[in-house]
Structures are given as C-alpha cells and as structure tokens.
Amino acid sequence: MKRKIIIGIACALLAVCTAVGAFQHLKNSSSKEVTELSSTDITVQEIAESEIPSEETAAVSPTDLPAETSTVAKTQKKIETSSAERKAENKKPAVPASQTTERITEKSTEAEKIKVTFSVNSTRAHEYGADVPEYIIPSCSYTVKNGTTAFDILNTICRERGVLLEYQSKNYILSIGGLKEKDCGTASGWMYSINGQRPPKPASKYVLQSGDVIEWYYVTSTKD
Image 1 (cartoon, rainbow, N blue to C red):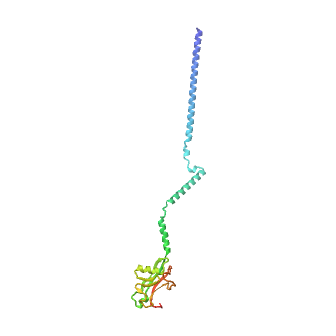
Image 2: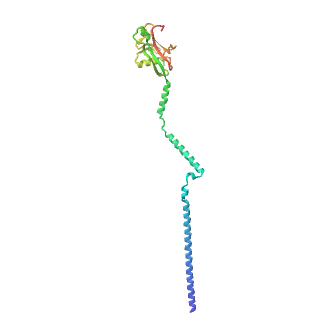
Image 3: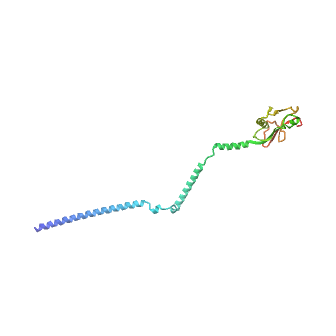
C-alpha cells in the first residue's frame, strides 16, 4: 500500500516537473522571437532614418560646398547667362530686307547723280532786236543722272519747263523757245559751251561732270 502511494507521488512530481519544463521552454522561445523582431525593427528604422536628410544636411548653403563644386556651379551659371544673352540677341528684330535694299538703293542713287548749272542764253538775239528775253531759261542748278549729255539736259529741262525745242538731230538744234536759226541773220543759230569753253565734240557726245556749267547760247555772227 505504501509503495503504491510513493509511486503515485513520484509520478505526480514527474508530471509537474515536465509541465514546468515545457512552460519554461515555451516562455524562452517567445522571448527570443520578441527579441529578434525588436532587433529587426531597429535595423529597419536605422536604415530609414539614414536615408532621410538631416536638418544639418538640408541647411548646407552653396558657400559650404567644396571649392570644386562651387566652381562648377559658377561655370554652369556663366554658361546659362551666355545662353540667355544669345537668345536675347537672336530675339532682336532683324532689319527687313526691303529697308536694307532701300538704303543701298539710296546710296547708289546718290552716287549716280551729279549737280550742274544750266541756262539758255538769248542775249545776242535780244540785242539784235528779236522779241525774246535775254535768257529763255535763266541760270539754275540742277541734279541729273551721271552719264547725262549736254543735249540730254537741254531736252529734259525744256520739256519740264514747257519750252519748245526743235532739232534736226541731237547735234543740230533748229530752235529753242521759238527762236530759230537765221532769225537774226544768215550766220545766226544755237551753240553750247561748258564752263565758258566750246567743247570739241557734239552735244550728244559730251558727258557732263559734276560742277559743270552748261550754257546754250544764240549767236548772230561768226564773231560771237
């Protein structure tokens, strides 16, 4: 009887010890898992915090950067400024081609024109008694195209002033303003001079020069 009691007590104690051991093992395993999870959370948190810029890093100004970085920034700024200046230069309104052509034409036209003095002198016929003024066309300055001849200017100005001009050819004038050859004697007629001299060529061949004084004049004798 006593032996059965002792065996029962021993079995009960063994069962209790086994239960306590299992409980302790279970407790230790749970604690280990919690510790590992906590360690993992800390690692993830540390990594996340390391990727977020700190206030000190965000507050760094260009002046705190290394000299090389600052030089690159300045060079980049110069390039951007130069590019902006070129763009502004390209945006300037271009001079229209028509205006450029007009300016060139004006300069070319000025170079192609000359100034001369012109008159039609009928003093000899007036003194002879013909019913004409001393000057059918008074002396006056004119601007003509370069290449104009002594005949061209006579023809042009007579036409502009409404003065009648008759000629047998560009080298032989019959009458100016109604005053004809031989109206004042058999030797009377029209001639021309340049700067007070009678040129050795016909009027249609004499090309005027700037500053020339052209005078068509009427003679009444071979002495005139």
